[in-house]
Amino acid sequence: LTAQDALPYAIMEAAAVEEQVAELNAAKRAASRDASADGVEDDGYNLPSSAFSKVRKSTLNLNGTKFEFEDYAPTAFWHIRRRFNIDSRRFLESMCSEPLTGGEVGEGKSGMLFFFSWDRDYISKTLTAMELPFFQRILEEYYTYMTMNADETLLPRFFGLYKIRIPGRPTYRIVVMNNLFQVPVGVKLKISEMYDLKGSLRNRFVTDDEKAAGVSVLKDVNFVLAGRRLMMGPEYGPKLHNQLKLDTDWLKTHMIMDYSLLVGIAMEPATDDGEAAAGAPSEDAEQHQRHEPFFSNWQKEMGGLHAREP
Image 1 (cartoon, one colour):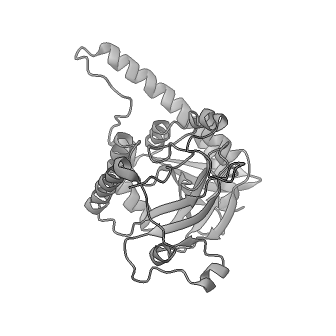
Image 2 (cartoon, rainbow, N blue to C red):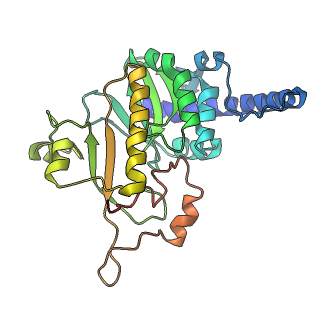
C-alpha cells in the first residue's frame, strides 16, 4: 500500500464525516441567526479557534492493510473549498474517482513528492516534519486572509491537510492545493512557458542541460533573456503590484521568506486568416468559466489574463 493509493480512499472516508458535521453546523448557525436580535449578518465563514486545532484521527483498512489517517482542521478546509466554489462532489470526483498520478520528486529544492488528480485540477504535495506544525500555527490567520481576499490574492489555495501512516513506510504529511497551470475545460490553449520568478538574477537560471534533464519551470534569467514582460496595462498593472505587496506583507508577517511568483504563458491559437484569436473566449469557454472552481480575478479570461498594452 502506498500513499498514492491510501490518500484518495482516506479523503473519501473523511468527506462523508465532514459533510455530516457541516450540515449540523449549518443548522446550528441558522438557529443562532433566528435567535439573534442584533441583525448582524453571518457570512458562514466565522469559525471558533478550536476548529483550526482539530485533528480527526481514524484507522482505515484498504485491501487488507490497516493504516492511520489524520485529517487536520477538516471544517476549516471544508469552508475554504466552499469559498472557492468547490463542493464536496466536485472535490471527491477529482481526488478520488480515479488513481492519482505522479509521485515523483518536484523540480524545486525541497525534495518533496508531488501527486496529481486525474483531471490535473489538484496537486498533492508532501511536507516535512517541521512544515506541518508551522502550517498548523498559521492556519487560522491563513484561513481569515484567504476567505476575505479569495478573488484577489495570489497566495496558493490549500484545500486539505493530512497525515498518513502506513506500516513499513515513512509517515506522509500531505497538503492538497490547486494546480495553477491547469487550463479550463473548453479553452483551447496550451501553456508553453512556465516561470518561477523571485525578482532576483542571482542563481536564477535553468541551463540547457537541466532542460534536457526534464526541468520545465524556468527562472528569472531565462525570463529576461527570452525578452518576456508582464504586460498588464494601466488597469491591471497597479492592481497586481498592490496585491503582490499585500500578499508578501502577509508572508513577511508570518516569517515566510521563500516565495516566488509563478507565471504561465500561452499563445492564443491563430484564426483562419493567420491573425491571433480575438480576446473573447468561445461560447463553450464562457459557459464553463461560470462553473469553473477557484477562479480569481487574475484568471477570468480563458483561465488567465490577456496581455495588454502599457
